[in-house]
Amino acid sequence: MRFEALSTLTAAALAAAAPATAPVEARQEKTDVPNVTVIGTGGTIAGVGSEFDTTGYEAGVIPIKTVMDRIPDLDTRANVSAIQYSNKASEAFVSSDMVDIAKLTNDLLCAPDSDQAGVVITEGTDTVEETAFLLDSLINCNKPVIVTASMRPGTAVSSDGQGNLLEAITLAGSEKAKGRGAMVVLNDRIQSAFYTSKMNANNMDAFDEKNAEIGGFLNYEPYFYYTQAQPTFKKTFNLDETLKNNATSLPKVDMIYGSQDFDSGLITAAASLGSEGIVIQGVGEGSIPSFAVDAINEVVDQGIPVVVSAKPIYGASVPMEDASSASYIKSGYVKAAQAKVYLELALANGYNMDQIRELFEGDLRSAIFHQ
Ligand SMILES: *[C@@H]1O[C@H](CO)[C@@H](O)[C@H](O)[C@H]1NC(C)=O
Ligand SMILES: *[C@@H]1O[C@H](CO)[C@@H](O)[C@H](O)[C@H]1NC(C)=O
Ligand SMILES: *[C@@H]1O[C@H](CO)[C@@H](O)[C@H](O)[C@H]1NC(C)=O
Image (cartoon, rainbow, N blue to C red; front, side):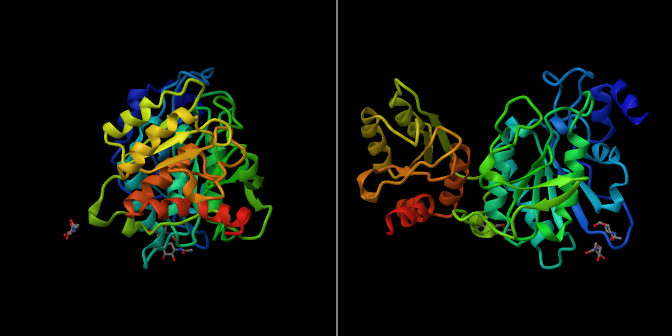
């Protein structure tokens, strides 16, 4: 009934029903269940279309509380509070959004008087991997940070949002989820934020990066394949240090996609547009054509670090044995979108060129070259 009623409402009426600035709101009064906060930011999970729209619907319309209210018996899993941070599509996120969400999450979970077991962030799938990677790097008090989303809006036949949100909330309240870094939950999968990527643009099993999988759900209950662990190559940053001087956004890092006929003028152009760091997704395992090296050397000489990632989703951009043999830095197992986040964080923390190289290359170099 609720579902039918919902699909007849217009997008505008739904949006008017709860302004994006709705305050924190406590839902349930039950004992013995963990406190979990859901931060709604928009995306398909808050989207509206017709029953047959799995594309072309409007994202970021329904308040997150409405999505929560459609999950049966949610209060038996957790005492859930909702914060509506924004209601927009994830491609519209900018660096200041990420800073705001990281601060909010950190305050909720890591403040000395925190009473929250975990936090769930709902977001559009398109940039989930960037958000999750940033939170994984910045929120370091051992409590679960879960990013979830959906591939179909709640109005579509067989939509996935309610189930994904129920699983994310259950995981956020679970003791088993502690000390594992940030995780992404979609389609009964638990993926490590460090490794995950959106692997399919359309179908519901969009987050099935095989190296990222650390657990799953049955009966909407989480289980893990391994005991508590964190990714070997993961590095963390202190939030207060990162945002010292009251920074409200992160340094500007731009990304260039490698291909045949690569135009090295794009590197020079990025620098002249004010890039403080550049990520190049090289072809293969991060290969750069010799005719682009001069342009790279030039920007590196200006103090702008250039990080080169691999193009395929699987495998590493392997560091060279002699670190001084190239001015650019190889990203190791960190993929292009995530390398952009790491570089932003490194620059915000005042890392010099050597420290940035160590951040990306250090662990892998010592593993393979025993340096
Ligand atoms: C549920 O969460 C709200 C908001 O954090 C809190 O005020 C309330 O005391 C909690 N209830 C229980 C039973 O833990
Ligand atoms: C939930 O939050 C309330 C209010 O701060 C607190 O009294 C309660 O102990 C918390 N519950 C748990 C299980 O931590
Ligand atoms: C940061 O903001 C706080 C509080 O508004 C202020 O006291 C402090 O001076 C600011 N620090 C800098 C470096 O701007």
